[in-house]
Image 1 (cartoon, one colour):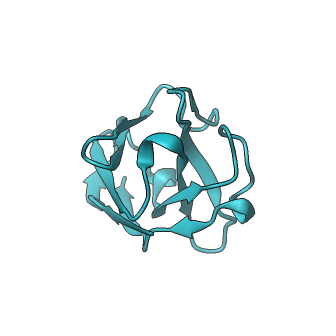
Image 2 (image 1 turned 90 degrees about the horizontal axis):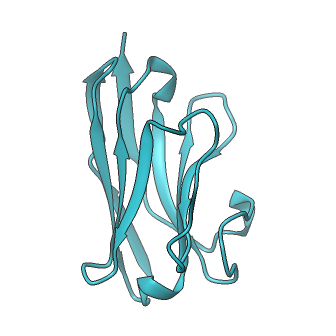
Length: 123
């Protein structure tokens, strides 16, 4: 099982980025995949989640700005981030939870993680 996150970079406040999470070694269509982020000195935070039934979840901090989507045929999960703010600066990770039937698990329960991609939003 592997997940590889990419697409991070430096962007100005108000800009957009699209992150990709390429997966292999498992059938993406059957499993929950989420995006998390962690800023220096802060706890890891879930920013979006996609369940196998197509449902998605977002915390209030990104709702309306971030959109998660998946292409099961390409085995890839995307995170479209719009209206970025300096407080969105963090390392972003994708992860999958093989046990959960839907989103809602704590990050501690996720089984496999990508390596992270850095997003820096300048003011």
